[in-house]
Image 1: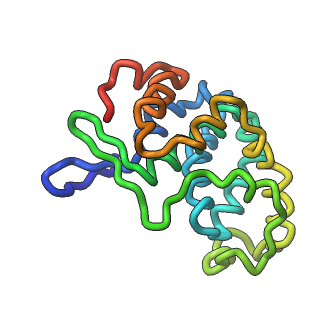
Image 2: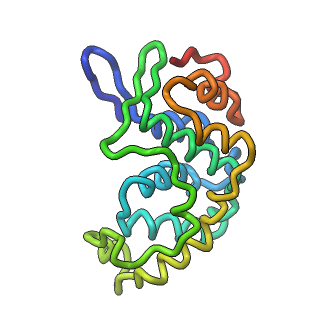
Image 3: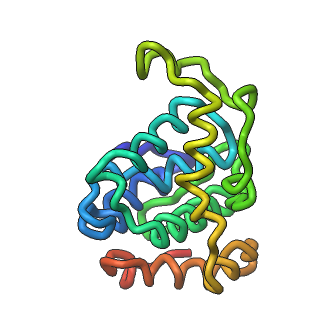
Length: 186
């Protein structure tokens, strides 16, 4: 696990704990590739690296990875983005967000992105020849439009600000697997 020290506190990226605790393969329909989906969605919420788009499209198209629980991934992405913006703490660990963090922009996943919006710096390393960015954009839109299909709890979580921390913590503690149910978070 990647931990580092910040002002005397051990700090771990929230994604590390989510992968180890809430996103176990059985929770995501047996998909080992599903371990990074919510993290990649959160990253694409603030940046548009073509390599992450490629990874997400590949996961959504490739069995058995494509069998992930879409409602759970959407919820995890919403929570991950909230933690990126507002931070989260446990007794011996703190999660601090990256620069440019923002709440999950569900509308961005419903619109077709233009190839020029992607940072294609390292996309050629993934495949030869490099994938067509317009095709990737189309696949991303069609395969991840479920992120815009929010339920009532998702909608409430998307509206949560720093003052709604207890609601977000309750949602984290209610995640499948119960790994956070007894953890003190603030």
